[in-house]
Image (cartoon, rainbow, N blue to C red; front, side, top):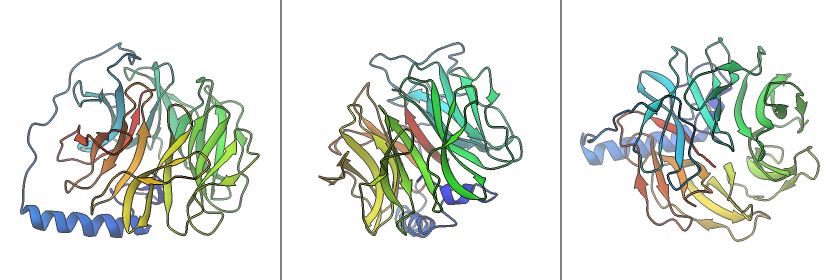
Length: 322
């Protein structure tokens, strides 16, 4: 589950899970950190550079798209995986969130509140060519790309207020509800012909896998804790996710069938929203361990933790260019 996922089902977007237990965990962790740090401030903020007209490289210099409120409201930014080359892509008074880079690196899909409700937009990787793909009074959010870039999966409550996962073509046509369940379904992530997602159909949020047509639904985490934010590994053999099974939210990996669960992060603050790069084989995620939400990277075994944003703002929703 993305940070503020439950909040997004309501009206406002103040960071933290105000409608779920995640705000409680995050708030406690952040207060404790602030007391310990006694006002410690950030240093060396990243400076933006102009990459107008650029398409995202598939070379060694992987890129991360993310959202940040560093200039007031939440906007979409992009940077290199080491934190350099920071560039703002959206300029709107409303919040823009949850970017996802297309497989060919030429487009970014995201959600925006610029029309008075959450809609799915797509733009070129330099921020040009913005197009509303959903144009519906319901809440549409959490978009992700199909592996070949021809379709998008996203979350919507257009069917009576319940969160369902839909797929559509990249021009907004061909909408299909692939979950059709009375419980909430969200957090889609696509690999091959399968989609992993979060569902509350067993009474608590678990990680499920299904075929891209909605058949073959299987609960692979099957845990009484809250499991959110699934993301496939580059080879499709593993899934990285966030869970509070050990108290607060931490980052874990498991095999695609749910076996061999491994914990990667060990921190009193929340760790969430992981994304796995096929270029660098790193995992990026957002964490509250510095008193605010920052974006970090690490190796798949949990080593090499690096803060790549170093901002006093909230930096959320990281997505690695594939």
